[in-house]
Length: 410
Ligand code: C5P
Image (cartoon, rainbow, N blue to C red; front, side):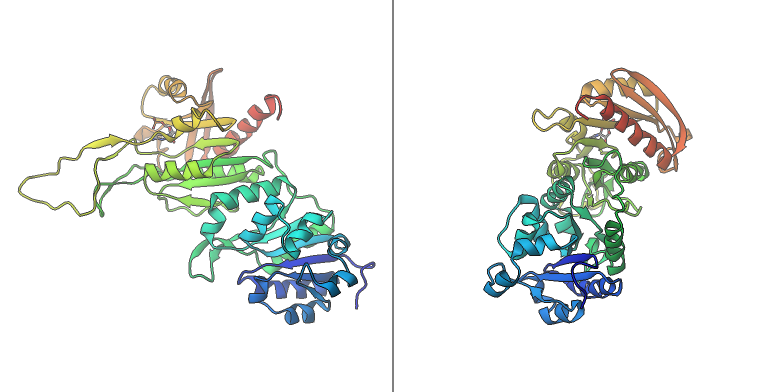
């Protein structure tokens, strides 16, 4: 059997999720690379894999109980946490992450994480709604800020039959992340590491009745590109998206909504954040009343639809008395008097920066792949060249990094 001293050693915490079966393969990969694996099986984890499977594959005793007299006399939990070079949590359930983020220590796994002087790498696995829940988002951001590394989750089919973001990374990916850590490779950290950014994107759909709606021509491409660029710069990004047909950016949880009011509620739930970027083309109005039944054609002629104003998400976030994001960015899609309208919007909404776009039909911006951004702040106006939406997004994110860097405290 391998000894502790001559090979790297991993303490693997197996949480309670169906993905626990993949941890068996992970152990096999680690053992194949001569990495010692000690396992800790949570009570919930034991519902999915047996201690015998873990012991057989790891060739080591499996630890399950904080208050086990025999375990504690053989190797106390403090020693167990200290002897590993790295603690790996796979699957890392919402519960394990919540405990770790809040410093709870009411079972062996959470106590080890709290007692450890070693870094931890988590491979989250949970239903996509659990992953996207503001509580999990907060815990994730806190753990990242505390130095925990993450691999995944990935998007894909889940055991519950739903598809989304929350599938555990494949054993090979987790193995690669462990190897990279053990080899001393730094975690890729961008200039926005540790910053949380909430971005709205896409159109909203405002129902006329259960089958009809009012919409606009926004494709969501620019907002999604900004989310990708912010993620690539190391930020924790939450994307609140209206109905679009483009794939979610990698590593970014997407909260899907239809109406302006749903978007407003999703943004509320995603706050607080460091930067808020309102790239969505939110419908300014919705149809008054409720729309439970389909409106029928009849002798009375076309329906008399009354419009009422939607909540202005950007204005509300910009004007928050408590917990206003440090930087609030709006977009202004205009067909005429671009700068003049953008300037007024900056003042009226109270945001820090407006990205103005000419969306007149001749510009091809709405639904197209290119954009010409005009940056309007209280200090002045800067026009950027026509760029593809990804490049424009990277430029915008770099600009935001510069603004933050210029401010004291960043
Ligand atoms: O007022 P207008 O729609 O032109 O303002 C555009 C900016 O305001 C965009 O950033 C858009 O995302 C945001 N907005 C919003 N909620 C609304 C209307 C616009 O957040 N109801």
